[in-house]
Amino acid sequence: MRELSTLRENQDTFETDETRMLQSMTIQESVHQWLALQLAFEPQLRQTAALFVREWQAALAQSSFGSAA
Image (cartoon, rainbow, N blue to C red; front, top):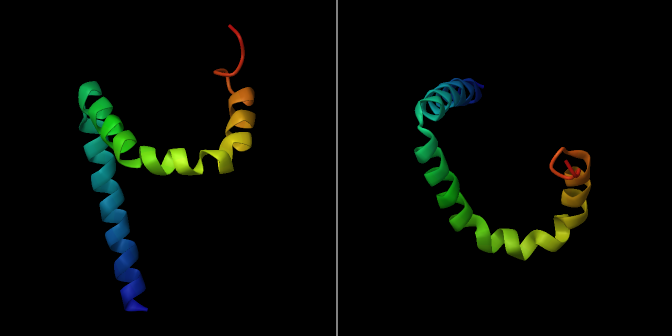
């Protein structure tokens, strides 16, 4: 049980550090990070797009992005 407790403590520390890092990023750094993730995951996103297209379209229709302004 001690290992699970240690894992939880480490996770809390990690999340705190991650939040601090993300809050300190500039817009340029955030965009750069987002583009790097997009580049890394683009092949998987394209391969699985058909599995999630209906869910994505429904979410888009419910959001303000899906409505004409």
